[in-house]
Amino acid sequence: MKPVLPPFESFYARHSGEVFAFLVRRLGRDRAEDAFQETFLRALRAYADLRRAENLRGWVFTIATHVAIDELRRARPRVELADGPAPEDVPAPIAALDDLTGELPPTERAAVVLRYGYDLGYGEIASALGSSPEAARAAASSGVRRLRRKELE
Amino acid sequence: MTAVPASVDDAFRGAAAAAGLLDVAYDVVESPLGELLVAATDRGVCRVSYDPDPEREAEVLARVFGARVLRAPRRLDHVRRELADYFDGGRYEFHLTLDLAGVGPFPRAVLDELARVPYGEVTTYGTLAARAGNPRAARAVGTVMNRNPVPIVLPCHRVVGAGGNLVGYGGGLERKTALLRLEGVSL
Image 1: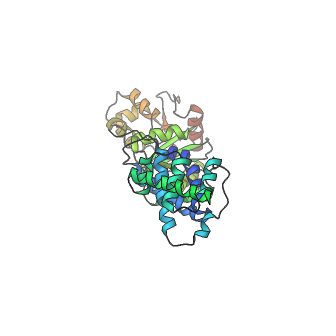
Image 2: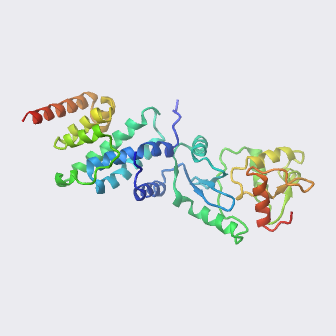
Image 3: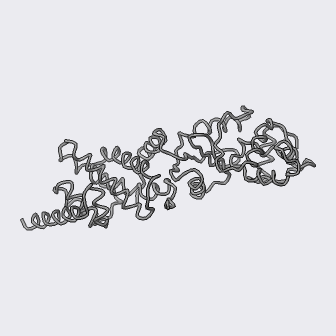
């Protein structure tokens, strides 16, 4: 049976601020603007065929993560990434985690931030990263191990 | 949660509409009769609503036309312009295509007849019923008027009782009076 989805406007009103803040953290303000539009256009394209109406937040974060990783993989100096004003509305633990993970490879960083910052399950992270839940778990724990080593240095 | 910057928000709404990804685009527009919610599908205007509660309207629209309902002001520019001209007294008919999906056959026949009632004239519920093929259905015509999905554009304000009294209006009798006065009908 087709789920009863909220009007896209309600879904957008509810999650757009948080997604924009997430993308600004990951990409900097300028690149976040394009990535934001791309994220919600992808969401809109898929919305009519969604089979589950629960956890739309997790779903849109997986899309945003895909878009951010695509953007990061385009060759540009990484130095730019940390630029852009930090939005005030990012919860402190996420901001801290985001700073902390700045030097991790993109996939590990995404896995760590989504798992420990946004509290997504490995299934959701896996679809964001285009991998399996096992690979998502491995990326998160490899990221955490790398952070621990860094801390000990 | 800080809102998305207005320019980024506008750009997304414009891109969504331009890409043809919406089941329904809507906006809330100012009018001399108060705020109106206007909505359109790719096929035409599907809703004009007085005293709109956009959240509730969006849910109703989603059920009838599909869940991809988004406020997209630019997509409604032509409707906004025609309404403004009408309220300025400079437009006597609307050149808007309509999407009346979800309207049953009898109401549809009545609304088709309603569309033919000219600016500045009134007709009665009974006359409209007869023109729609059922002279005894005056009361049912009243119900159809009350549920008119696109008031103003389909002029249910031009339908009055046999004795000339205004009877009722989905947007309230005050608005019916205002629209008839605008069109120069002496009351």
